[in-house]
Amino acid sequence: MTAMPPLRHRAAAKKPKWIIVLLSLVCLVLIGAYVYPPRGYSQCYLFGSGVCTPFKDWLPSMYRERTDEEIISSVVIRDILAMPMPVSKHPKIALMFLTPGSLPFEKLWEKFLLGQEGRYSIYVHASREKPVHTSSLFAGRDIHSDAVVWGKISMVDAERRLLANALEDVDNQFFVLLSDSCVPLHTFHYVYNYLMGTNVSFIDCFRDPGPHGNGRYSVEMLPEIEEKDFRKGAQWFAITRRHALLILADSLYYKKFKLYCKPADGRNCIADEHYLPTLFNMVDPGGIANWSVTHVDWSEGKWHPRSYRAGDVTYDLLKNITGADENFHVTSDAKKLVTQKPCLWNGSKRPCYLFARKFYPDTLDSLLKLFTNLDLETRETDPSSQQL
Image (cartoon, rainbow, N blue to C red; front, side, top):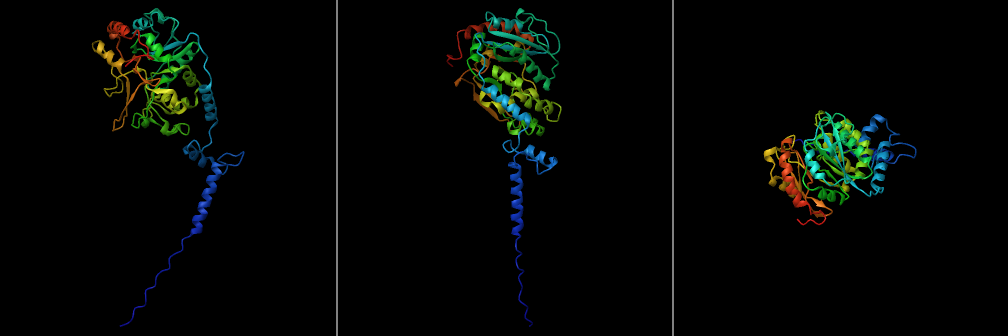
């Protein structure tokens, strides 16, 4: 038998360690050149702008060079948040009505404001037709108005227009945005003390990972606005003078929403539901309450909240709304996650809502009758001493 030659084993190929080491060194040099460029050079001095710019936009803000607009914006916002506000001897609440035309509840607001002269101001932005006023309190309160389209940046423009007019009066210290379907829930005395007694703004703000929340975010908002900072909330706010100034001073974030948050861009982004919540989540998250003092019922799960007709308005309905001391947020994803939090006023649990919407004009008579009962119940109460 012929003996088989012994098997020969192939020598293991040597790993090209020097190539791995060389590539690692090159990567380190390139990263170092980007993060720590020589003085007088930008991060792109080694790269073409076509390669560098997209990469820069995706980097976290701490690693990328801020634009001139970002630096200007951060300085202005920082100083507005830090500077002392002028002290008014006669502080007022600015009631800013955003309406397509006439206000059906002027008589109810007149009753609400009776005897409170010098403690409030009224501003009316009518986007479609000149209002016909039924109360002398609203006569001469119309401001220059432009057309407003639901969901578009024109809604935010109208809010800013109202704020600009209201800020001209140095005595206006709190600014409340109201619609033509809004009604008061408490006495003016209660509302005044509730707002003037705190230094936070009531801006609705929460994170919704679903299609009607972060699903509306656009990467075009980078690098200034990252998806993790994108927020949602109701547009009806009550804000301090400081925050009103900040909104008018902002151009950087406003421009991003004007260009990339539109109702017909495939994401159905609604500017007035996202601009202010996102802005304040980024620049002053500790300065807002994260809920709106204007109640609205979204329980029907439709594009618009529930509307109340004359037959719906009862004493129990209003008591349930005025007695609510917790706010709710529901995500729009499949999980429908419900977040329930207490409404804290200066650290104490208090009723959440000062106003409510959406009420049809035919509810006026019922509301006038019921407001008298609510008026008597809350006339002597004060948020700072209220026992719940």
